[in-house]
Image (cartoon, rainbow, N blue to C red; front, top):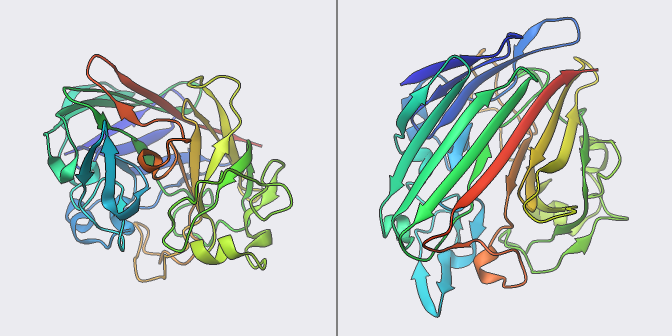
Length: 336
């Protein structure tokens, strides 16, 4: 089922209850010309048949966003085994993660929608019955506000995120390598050959991962850097500079000089995955009939760090009974 949201300024999007996806998001440029700035399709059946990467377009990701090494983790000394769907690792909730289920619509208005889903104990290997609510709202400040809440009846792990792929030129209109990106992070989490964090919180200074000042995304893609080779480009988690854990703060900003569109990202989370669309190869055709080529999009996924359950030094993703998981992510649009 599809729903259309809009705000007083004409910002609008189409969402679906299948995976709580954003199917389109229409944003004006500096001249008032609108473009759909997210990748995807209006055919829900296609999401069911896409490959591992493409199926996540615009979706809500859970129970655990990003990777868990070998699909295994422990809570209170008990080991759990998850569905493996990314080489030897678990990725984005498993074979049938939150992106592949139909959510319940609790309420809907002209500018907002509230979804809910109950993830059964043992679903994809995760312990505990998890009750989740998440909402999309388009504010008159031209913000897309995404809010998540979850409770459990047994100790479990939770790391929800949103997975829209953005191109501020408009979906299918070339690469994002000319977009200018800023990430408010002094450190990032290097990965091994399977894209699992090594545990190090490495400084970005002096590396291609330094986006503390506005930097053209493609300017260092060809650098002689082992981490870029492992990710096929940018596919890493940044450790956001946070004055206070859990506080809502600005994580990033991406700007398209050609259209003037700017997107700012705010989050309560400690990390953000920047993925540069490295594995699109032109075989998928978008909503306007144009192929999705390599580097045709940018995903900025606010989250806890990948493989956190296996790294006690990382911020914890354990949720226990009588606790509430709460996260806010905001994508704010403007023109320059």
